[in-house]
Image (tube, rainbow, N blue to C red):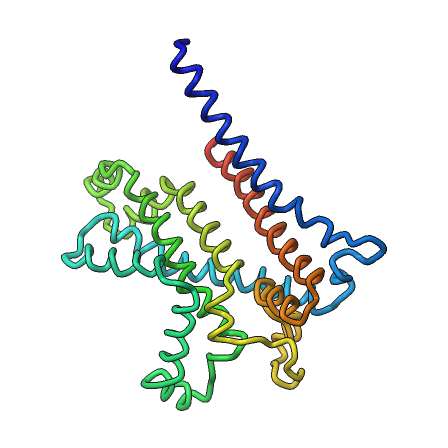
Length: 283
């Protein structure tokens, strides 16, 4: 091995070590807040029902949002990757530009969209309301989660050899069959990665949800339906929003506990998906 290769490997390992140490210190430096001397862990949030409802709401809403994003985004990503539409470039730029928007801007745009104009009239006519409701959380999460997942799914389809689908077409498969039986299974690792990205983005959503839905913890139980109570998501906020509420009220230990729970849940998801992804590649 040449001297240049040895030094290059050392530089890479050094950079990796710095990143790992920096991230480790980011979490380790706050352990004294989570474990105060003579006090309960994270301000005693583990014994609070609203913490478990917030965790439940975060996981359920992120899962539902990721599934809806996949349902809408995977076919759209395949169409964009094949460039069969004359206006695909404009659609690609528009959908990709959403990622550059601050989450608060997305939330404000949703407020204006659902509070005024045709969508407001439609809600009045149907007798439903989306803004400042629990279903509104899914809407607020979906915008950026879909935009992020779409980029990963498109990249997965673009990495495929187009001859796979062409061969299927010559053997009598139509466009849907080529997509469903050839492209989709071949792009499975990339699709899984996009699904995880969408889930993580939805799980950590804050600005859009806060502006579009506000908070629910202090609302009376009568504001929530039977389904919300059955799922144990009534009078609860997303963990990211609950963290902000705790800190705003001066309960820093509880806020750090919410943040720690959010980080731990996301890390567990990434670990499980990486473990399953290795099995997929192994097959």
